[in-house]
Length: 210
Image (tube, rainbow, N blue to C red; front, side, top):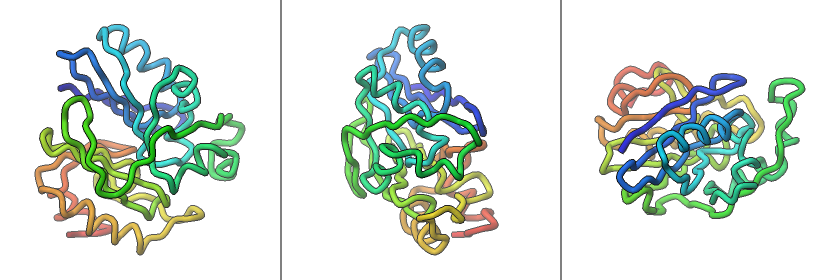
């Protein structure tokens, strides 16, 4: 199993491609600008087929290319609480890069807290981590000891809570109850910046120590 990270424009948003080269299948976590063109090339080079797109949340910089994946018939997964942002992204215009075009997308399958799903033959647990957005979710793959956290937590930081619908108190609760309860060795692949581990953030995150 291989994890490929790409930092994409316009504000350095991370997208992650999880590849199973044995089965020639792949899934993508989040769809920033240029995700479609970038990962289409990678998948062609790797001779892999994209099975699904998993959205950690619905903020504009993570969904800019969702419509392109939807147009090609890729199954898209996300949380119901952020569907309104994905279907009507114009409501985020005041918080996006001026002049950027955000096409409406869709979610085909809604995920809820505690759902256990299979991703490329691996068990994955869905954890609802609201606070940065109402529908933020984290994907935990215990067999790989990895998680994809979106913007809930970063290396040495946490997600912004000054947008409409955000709450520091709720985010802090989500981190303590849904992220810091993961095994310390779990790698966190966040929506911005470098990866970290649960143990590192519990010990040293200046915003919220465990």
